[in-house]
Length: 337
Image (cartoon, rainbow, N blue to C red; front, top):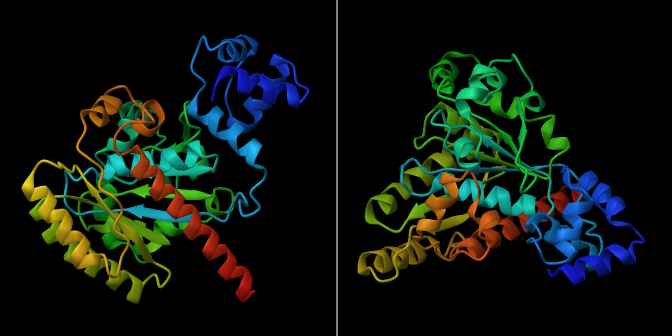
């Protein structure tokens, strides 16, 4: 969006620059001021993606299916490390938030990579006693620990290394498999989407996330070891669906770190499509790109900081598919009711 377009929309609302800043702040939870609006309108500063998305939706008109809850709970899982699982979770959640959906990202990994990826200091959060560990142990509610990412409006439930203690304790506690589901129950009424990033294993924390979720997204690096682990992961999803969460589905597979010039990558991508394509949605591959590491180093999501980066369109496609999934589930509930 150009500055002139933004000015035209502001004037159509009959708002001064100061009034427009207040209007934006109320919808995006920001602290914009008149000077910031002026710089945008004069093309002296780039209009943030969140503002661009909001104003684009204003032109399109209201979306009746957006209800501000109930949330679609999404688990991003793969037991293999190094498959861009956290990068995928962060960018999918950010894409939803940038599209104006109230979105929470829960970092359920003791490594706290998603927390750090978005510029949140996990050590500081742990020192202040405001991480997922304290929610899982009943000391706090999710609302007590949420941190807002300024650029996107995404709300993050941070993690820390102490969450590793919970991994052991959940297996010993009666009803331990259902704690995450219990903890997000209230949040489901006020968020559109809750995205859960999980550890690179099928342990108690990952199981908790799957029991709480409506659908799963599986990032899979286009290399043979990742492909070999896919069947095992899907078996675990099926077990949880049978035994503990009949609502759990699989939205699809996101091939990641794809190198078009590498024969092995092309062959593995073809195998993923042939083996799983008839039954599951296989999204276009996210190519290997150094900008994802660069975005992480500055505490930003690539889809927000560099919206035209290779692969960003794939993450936006996944976000759109989640919107469709949520809408379909809400309509089904309404139909049954």
